Length: 303
Image (cartoon, rainbow, N blue to C red; front, side):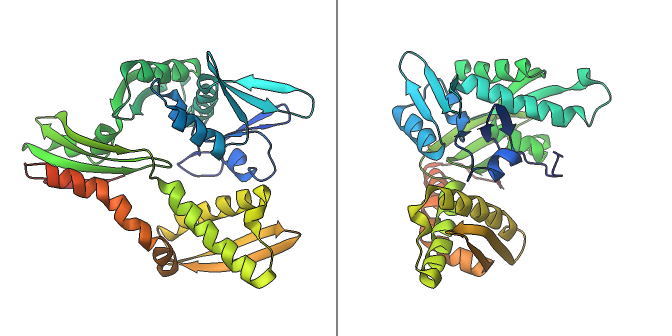
């Protein structure tokens, strides 16, 4: 677990003055920080597109130069600083290394198996390995994300040959894969990848709903303020995670806009109603891959 006791550390990096913040501190300070990088992983793919660059730049608060090499440009109070996706990834792995080192007696025991997107090339995976090794990890192997999901549920130990549907919904992407498991070996039968669907779409819908409620009561529009929307998105994301296990969540945002605080309860039923129009879009990759696959699917893994 990290400093906050969570098992998940957000892959967000912020530059606060001359100090780098990684994980929860960076996520919590999104509203006040002028230099934040989110979704850096998309640009670790050697085959990234201009669409990926625009997506990361819009989600972050820095400029991205994409001339000979891709470079992040941060503006501080004193000067401009520059970095790149590899350096940012190394900082994230360094944070994870620090967290992991607190759980072992000998840092030499920190061996790592990396999970990479299924569609990534060998060169992209090698970039991840180098960043993790620079952070101090001993990388044993790189496996695909669907394979990691099957290992987590011990499905690779199945005595019979089976086909497993693995549906992964990430922060900004989702994919559906059919993996054949045979005698401990895994082989990909089919894969559908979407880079326009992710959990951040659901977070945005919830944030827009809260903004609408605030606007109706106070006649102030948080959507006109970048700082207010950063606060809204952060609290909406936390609310979304709470609603995954509880039937309701409380949202309190201090000084959302013009010094006005906002307090609201959101039920799971309300959240499901807010995102109901999007559900069919998220189901489509799974439906498409099932309809095009001729074999029998024995198990389904959601991750």
